[in-house]
Length: 237
Image (cartoon, rainbow, N blue to C red; front, side, top):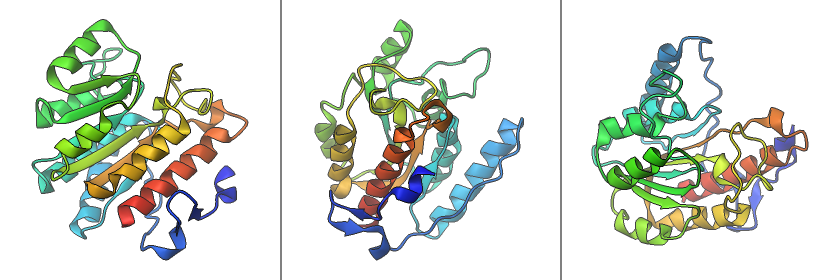
């Protein structure tokens, strides 16, 4: 298990996980084959966390896990904005005849919060209509993280949910994901972005779409662990 070799100390922040208050809430035993029950469980679990004024960091495979977490947090923070890093816009209305999937998750969140409250970065793959739809309804920034500092300034005072689909990274550094896309950002691009979040009001976050079985080298899992470490340290400040 690659996570066992990851140090708790961050040289990027000169801080150690052992010096902050945090807790591993464990795994949710989601029911196989019953997506509605699984989403309801995630929603309920997220509500329990935020009622204690804690900040949840959700870890998932399928990106759909973001939806119930956002729904729970939205009830507490009605002005919630979404910061979304991903190789894909995930704004299809349906995917393979299904309205709830990794390819529709941002569309379902938009159904809840409306126009211009979802900021998307790193998007570089999808159907033409997805790019057109996202440009009209969200704030879409393709290929990289250019403009993200301006976005962070604009929403500096607003509650933010951060969702990072790890396929935003280039597959040369993160091959272990279900839908890798060439032309992604570097590991240090993502770390540098996370370090900029200190001034923002992050009320929840997730890391999704790691698929260790697609990367026998283990570098993807190691990268995900380090990204999680930096995110946890930033949110604990």
